[in-house]
Structure formats: C-alpha cells, structure tokens
Picture 1 (tube, chains in turn yellow, blue, green):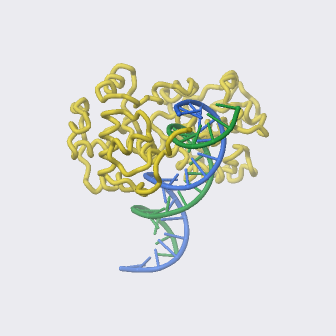
Picture 2 (spheres, rainbow, N blue to C red):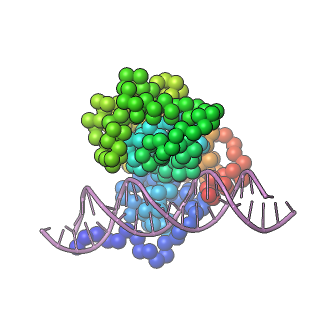
Picture 3 (tube, rainbow, N blue to C red):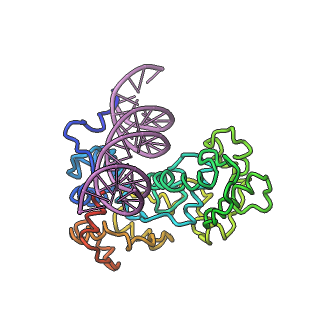
Length: 285
DNA sequence: AAAACATACAACCGCGGATAT
DNA sequence: CATATCCGCGGTTGTATGTTT
C-alpha cells in the first residue's frame, strides 16, 4: 500500500549546506533534472532529505534567481499582491521573476511589515490601524506609493487609482484574502501608475497572467543546460540582471569546473571573480 | 573592546492536497 | 475506497552578522 517514505530520517544530514553538497546538487539537477525529489539525494550522492534538496535548489541554487534586496517596485508589488492574496507567498513569488516565496516571506516579515506598521497600516488587513499619524514621516517613495495605493483603494475611487490593488478585496475585508484571488478579480484590477512601479513593465506585464507564467515558472525538470540556454535566448526569458552579479554559484561552477555541470553553454558569459570569502558566505549562510 | 541586543535570512517543521498503490 | 506517501506551501526557528551601548 502507498508509497515508500520520503526519507529514512536516520542518517539524513540537516543544517547549512556545504559548498560540496551544493556542487553535487547543482551538478545532478543540471545534468538529469529532478524526476522526483525523493530520488535526488540518493542519486546525487547526498545525505539529505529530498525535501531539503528541493528547498535548497528552489530557494538558493536555481540559476534564474535574483539575489539581493527587493527593489522599491518589487516591494510595492509585494504589498499590493499581499493585499489581494494574503500570505500566499508562492503566488506572490510567481509574480516576481527570480524571487522565491521564502525570500519574499522573509522580506515581508523583516522589512515591509515594519514599514506598514510604522505607517499605521495593518500588515494583515492593509487597513489603517490608526490615524495616519506623522504624515510628515518624510515619505519614502514607498510611503507615497502605499498611501496612494491604499487611500485610493479605500475611498472606492477606482477612476484615479494608482495602486494595483483589488478594490473588491478591501470592500470585503471580512473575507479571507485568499478568497479574493480568483481570476474574476481581474475585472476590478486597476493598472499601476508607472510612477508606482518605476516603469517596471516587465513586472506589470507578468502580473496578472496565469500562474503558469512562463517567465517565472521555468520548469527545470528535465532541462538540459543546452535547452536551458536556448530557452533563455529564444523565449525572451532574460537572465536576471543579477545573474552575473550574484552568480557566486556560477563561480562555484568555475571552481569545480564548469564542464562538470555541463555548463559549457555558459562559457561565453562573463563570470566575475568573487573573493573566496564571498563565496563562503554565499554557501554558508 | 566586548557584551548585549537587533536584524536578516537559510533551513527546518508540520500540515494539507494530490496521487500512487 | 482506504491508506500511505509525495510534494509544495506557510509558519517558525536557529544562527550568522551588524549595530548599539
């Protein structure tokens, strides 16, 4: 009956990944894809749970990841999406190319949440929890954006809105945010003012597409590096701008030998030299 | 200079839906 | 149909790093 256990807890390593483990995982997935995560650790020679491998890959090793802080535009997008979707981080992440749910979740908890509270906005309901005290708060761009977004949203004035917020969701604030994510919501969407998103058209364009947005949900399953590169080159799938900047993992590849990963296709790319200490950091944390 | 505190983020845990047996 | 497991998700924790006292 049923299936075999995902991993036999015994002998499974936990805690931070080492560079060596990263190397094995990257090497394996780029070569073979991941048919099923359960099999990955064994096949890749890792003493890890498949779950752990999946997490490491999706949150850290995946080559299409952007790294570094979220931009103001991305942050605003997260706020707006959170207003509509609630804590559905994976859905939110799907709208932000190169960002992971974990990253967004962390950023929300450490940055955005505090900002909103500071602004007198309940980060859960996105409603004012107190008088907009200290309007002076010398408005960061975010503050302005958020005020526009929420104020417009709450005043029901849909004609002049600048935030990308589902007005319906606020009118129905008693509803769970998760109930507001049906595709029919689209009728009430308003376009983001370009000032809000800093003209990040890419983000906007991808915003209300279906979850299967190909610019985001690039399937790495069964991708061989050559196909991968072809996808990037032919399907308007851009390498994240930070690909090179943050490509410590790529440097890893360089150290290990790019050929080991079947990454010859990346040979034309400029790979910046990064201090080994930086690398350590990257793989350590 | 060092201790205490705050922050950021990678990784783990546990749950629920989907699916194989 | 029942059960066991996989997979993905969201919440939480642990720890490294940065800042303040």
